[in-house]
Image (cartoon, rainbow, N blue to C red; front, side, top):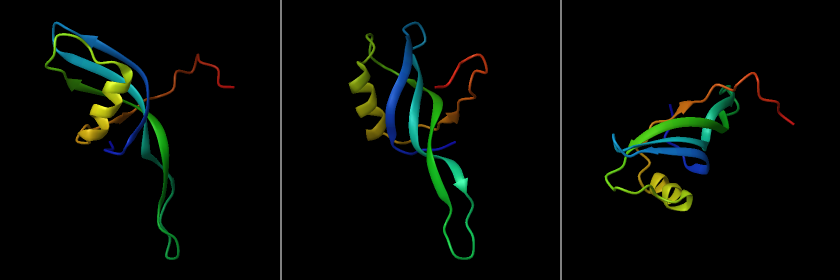
Length: 90
């Protein structure tokens, strides 16, 4: 889990019945790329994550409104999204 800055919203879905937005986003400092050593600090990189938030309004936000909201309230805990093995990466 991480509470880093949201760099990009890849996808989101609003469930109006439950008032929940499910989000897939690129979040800064999510993946540990190198552990700390006696000389160097640990190093992190961004990663694709998923999360859900409660949304009190009846209409969903735009992608830019959602990105601004997520970065304003960084108490969202993100889970790393596992890549789909059927997807091809270029």
